[in-house]
Figure 1: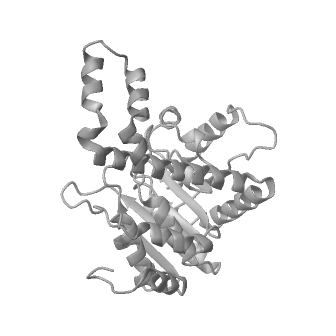
Figure 2 (figure 1 turned 60 degrees about the vertical axis):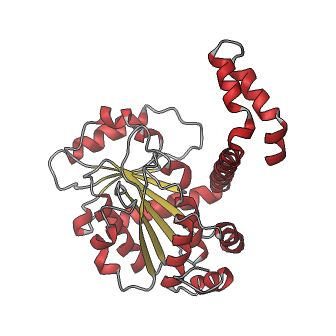
Length: 325
């Protein structure tokens, strides 16, 4: 396939399903590199997906996302779960690689064959996730992970994509990291399935919980909707983490019972298909280059001879575009 591996895609998939970390790593590398083999990889993985429960973890920098992820992995392993972790870090502007390297902070799991941890650079992608994260989740799902944890770069108005990718979204807050009004502005009160007040041994933890409870009670939810619980943890000491796992399991059961799991996954697949289709169209557009007539249309719009909507319709209906699309 490349100089790094001579194994075929079916061989890599078979090895990944046997739990071979090297094969999982190679498949995710193919995803991140947008390899020409990516379509073949996704085709081979498709029959083996849909089994893992995807848990997203997000929150402002400094609330303890990596520590909480580490503690959550430990609790899940005690329950006999195979766990995959995708830690999406800010990217180096020079290499495109992940800067923080969450694997360094999870050394206690490094030798556990039932845990796979991968740091992925966001590569400048807004939303807190790498563009390749959905495909990487598919790799870990097919590799037999019972739970896939995605830890995002941070949280903000442009960083809530995690809610569209995860089955269960955990939003972390901590005392001293900003008041509840700021949390509402960031949009996190709209995306969380479970709220976690970490560093609960610090002064102000009870106040954060009260503010959260008050603000969540004001949200208008349809009858029968999930009511997000608030869990207090001290992740560094593992306190409250078992309760957090129970809430995740309770939410997983609710998703299955109400049909919400199928709805969320269908919406996720729809978004993924749409994103791939748009990327393909852009690629084909680039291949047309000067043959598309775009420059002439742009000049007409700039001169006031045509409006942008009519120009866009003319471009899409052009023979060159139609033949390539």
